[in-house]
Length: 261
Image 1 (tube, helix red, strand yellow):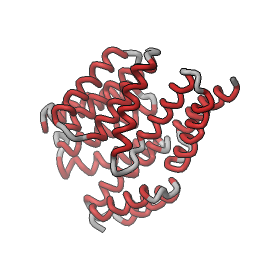
Image 2 (image 1 turned 60 degrees about the vertical axis):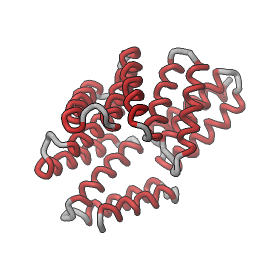
Image 3 (image 1 turned 120 degrees about the vertical axis):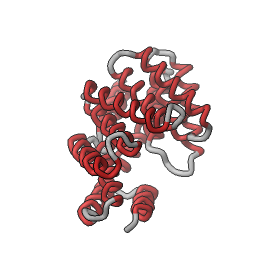
C-alpha cells in the first residue's frame, strides 16, 4: 500500500460513515502491517493519533503523536516543516486534555518552526495562530485570543482559498462572541461558517460543532423546540462519527438542561 492508497482508503471509510470502532480497527491493522513501510507507517500513526483525539482517547493520541515525532527526527530533523506539523498536532491533543502549559509551549515551538520554514504567509502558520487563540480563550485571555484568531484570518484571506480553515476561524470567533453574550454577532459569523462548510465537497467534522453552537443560540433566543431538535441531531451525528466522546457528553448536558425547562 502506498501513502496515497492509504489516504484514499481512509477517506472512503469516512465518506461511507463507517462506525468509529470499525475505522479504529482498520487503522490499528494498517499500523501493525506497515511497521517497515516508512512513510505509510508515519501517515497511519499520525491518523491514529488524530482519530484517538477525536474520540477523546487522549493518552493514546499523545503516544502516537510522540511516535510520529520520533520517526520524523532522523528522516527530516527537528527544524523541518514536517516536524512542525506534528508538534502542532500534539499540542492540540494536550489542549484537549486541559494540559495548557504543555500545549502552549508546543504551539509556540510549532509557530517558530513554521515561521522559520515557510514564513508567516502560509496556511499552517495561520492554523497555529488560531490554535494559540483557542488556548488563550480556554485560559481566560479572551482579548489576546481574539487578536490571534483575527491575525490568522487576515493571513488566510490574503492567501486566498483555504475555505475550510476560514470557516473554522469564523466558527471559533462565533464561539468567542457567544461567550460574550453578543449573540447576534455570533449568529452572523456562525451562519457564514456553516455556509462555507456546506459548500465543501466533503463533510467537515467541525460542522457538528457549528450545529451545536447553533442549537445553543436558538435556545438563548427562545426557540427551544427548534434548539432541542438541532441538538438531538448533533448527538446522533457525534455518536455516528466519533462515538460518545467529550463533545457528545457536552451536547447531552446542554440538551438535558433544555428539556428540564
